[in-house]
Length: 417
Image (cartoon, rainbow, N blue to C red; front, top):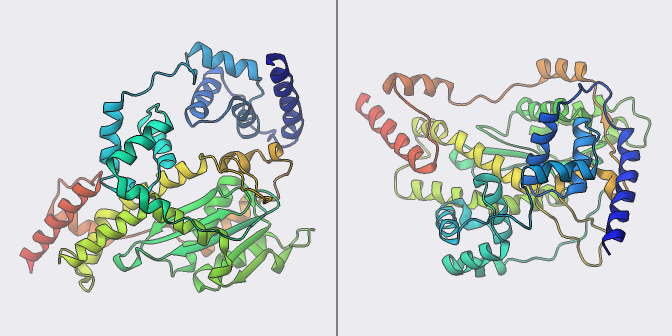
């Protein structure tokens, strides 16, 4: 049995090596042994399997290694999943209890398990997390069970075949406008940003161009609704695809339709709410309903954005990171492929497909960035006022300290009036 398993691993690695060698950038500098070790540990701690780590090192970092080498590195560092020293249940219960007092009350035990692993570096069993959450928050467990919906099957050919972009306005009444993009095949979050506006096309274009700079690929299709905020990004997509030779060149590289038809990103907004944003919605509603926040007062609106904008972005970053490394289960009687979004996106050869993106001309991307986009800016004038009122001001690290700072600044401003 062991020999059969070893042969299967070797065959998979040889196939993967042949696929990946053609895609490894030749300009990558040589990587030191230390870098190889650090990257191996990073991917191991994120929950990736041995063959996935080998593939990531090759395709993303240009490091040619073997299954045996990765196993030897992990063995030397005493990193073994079977011999892991798990976090004591008392500590685990305390951390979960703190999480479910905030945005963690929206997520299920699988997402909580990933959050504990990524944010707290805790090794825990999923069954233990499930039992503790069931004991600490039985009502929340039952509510999450009641919201299972059947949806139509969606399928894309491969990574970068289609990106779905859209804005999320549930926090817009409080000044926080969220915009995101999802890859249709892998379900990887391409970007997830919050700013003070979703109405400025130049800001959405900045998200798009920054992502092209990061991934160095242009998607074959950009899917959006008919909102004017996406118009520059859609025009830039057509420009970058104007000389393509496939059937989706030029104007055919964008698809504009109803929001209800933009299924992949619209469905993910529900996941975003379940994974923590619902808590923030209720938090700001409570501030408004108790009179702590007046949405008609322009100064209070600027104060709220100044105190909470960075915290919202941090929350979005952790949700996206946890989503991109979680395991998506295969759907019964459908052609949807299961796996981790990062693995599906960066190593499509494991799933018998390939990257459908085109190489981005980074010079053109940077020129377009200067001409047609603007970076995120918020509360610049209020920031100066806040530091004048309180020179020793330090930005908050959690919702509780942000609320204290918001209240203190409101009181200082009221004394000026």
